[in-house]
Image (spheres, rainbow, N blue to C red):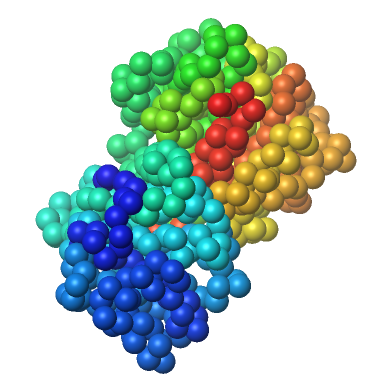
Amino acid sequence: MQFSVTPESIAEIPADCLVIPVWKDGGLGKEASALDAAVSGAPGRIAASGDYLWDIGDTHLLHGPEDCAAGRILLAGAGAPDDFGATEAAKFLAGNARIVLARNMPQVHFALADLEANGPDAQWLAARLAQEVEVAAYRYRATKASTKREAVLEGVSAPALADGLEQALRQGQAIGKGMNRARELGNLPGNICTPEYLASHAGELADASDNLSVEVLDEEQMRELKMDSLLSVAAGSVEEARLIMLHFKGAADEGKPVVLVGKGITFDTGGISLKPGLAMDEMKFDMCGAASVLGTVAAVAELQLPINLVGMVAAAENMPGGKATKPGDIVTSMSGKTIEILNTDAEGRLVLCDALTYAERFKPACVIDIATLTGAAVAAFGNHANVMLGNDQALMDRLLQCGLDSLDRAWQLPLWDEYQKQLDSNFADMANIGGKLAGTITAACFLSRYTENFSWAHLDIAGSAWHSEGARKGATGRPVPLLMEFLLSLPNKD
C-alpha cells in the first residue's frame, strides 16, 4: 500500500473517495467547506439536514459529485469539536479505514486538515492514519482456502499540512505492518508456528536487512549454557526449544542496545498441570510476546532507526508427555538459582528467567520483557491495559508516557519486597508460583531475581494480546505501538 502527501486542492484530487469529517453540529471545517463550495453545496446540505447526529461512526456516502475529480465523498461524523482528542482521532481514522476497505475504493484521500484544527497535530494524524489503515487492511488467509473477492486499498493520500508528513506516514505504516506481523504470527496455529518456525521467520527478517543479523541457540547449546529452566518447559514436547536473537545495528558499535525479550510459548497445554479444555485453542496466542518482539524489530529495521536493538525470543512448546517436567521437580536456571516447579502451567517465567540471564551479556541500556504471563492480569485489567512492573522507575515512567502517546496504554503495579516471600520454598531457592494472591506481582517478583544487574521493565500482556470473541477473535499486535513509541523517543535518536 502506498501513502502520500498531495498539495492539490481537494476538489481536484482524482481519488475514488474523499473522506471528509463532519462535526456534531453539522458544521464543516475549512477543507470540507472548500470542497462544499466546489461541488455546489451538496455536502453541506447533507451535513445540515438533521438526518445524522454526526457522532463518530455516522457516515453518508455521496456518489458521483459534480465538479469533483473524486468518484465519491464519504461524509464521516467526527463528534463534538471540543471533545476531539487523540483517542477520538484514532477511532475516526480506524472506523473510516474499515468503511473504505469494505468497498471498491482503491485510492482514498483523507481530509486531515479539519481534524488537525481541533485535535492532534499533523504529524501525529499522518502517522496514525497510516497505522490504522494498515491494521484495518489485515486479513488472515494463511490456512483458509476461501477465494472470496475482497476490496483492495492501493493508495492513501493526505493533504500537505506541514513539513515531515512523508516521514510520519512511513513511521505509521511501519508500526501498522509490525502489528500485522505480530498478529499473523499469533494467529497461526500451533502445528505451524513452532519454535523452529519462529527461528526461520527471524532468519527471513535478518536476510531482508543489511544491518540485522540472527543467532539461534538449539537445545544442545542451551544445555551447555545450563539453561535447564527453559529446557524444562520443552521436555514433554517433540518440538525442540529455541533461543532466538535478532541484532539490529543502527547506531555506533559501542552504543548499548535496548534488549526486548519475548515469551514464545507456541502452544501451552499447561503441561502436567493440564489446563481445562474450554478455550484451550487460544493457547496458540501464548507466544504473542515473542510475536510483538519480531514485529517491533521488523518495524525498526524498515525505518532504519539510529539505535542498537536486540530482540530475543525464548521459544518452547509446553506439553504433557513421558519426559515432561512434573510438579515437585526442581530445576537449575542458567544463573545457578534452583526452582521448585509447583505448577507446570507457570511456564512462561521459566523460559524468561534464562533468557533474561543471557541478556546480561549484551551489556544492555535496558531490558524490557513482554509476556502473556498471568491470568491474574486479565482478571484485574480485562483487555485494555498492558500491565507493567520493573526495577527502574525512570524507565517505567517513560513507558507509561509512551503508552499514553501511542494509545497502547500500560498500568504499573507495585513490586514490593513484601511479595517476594510468597515464592519461598522448603526445597529450592524459590518456587515458580506464589500462591493464590497477587499472581501478576509474584510472577514479576520471580523475574526480578534475574534482573538485578540491569534496568528492567516487565509487560504482562495476557489481557491485551488477543481478543477471544466472535469476528474479532485473534491477535491484536499489541504492544508493538508502545514499544515503537519508546524506541522512537530514545535520546540517542536523531
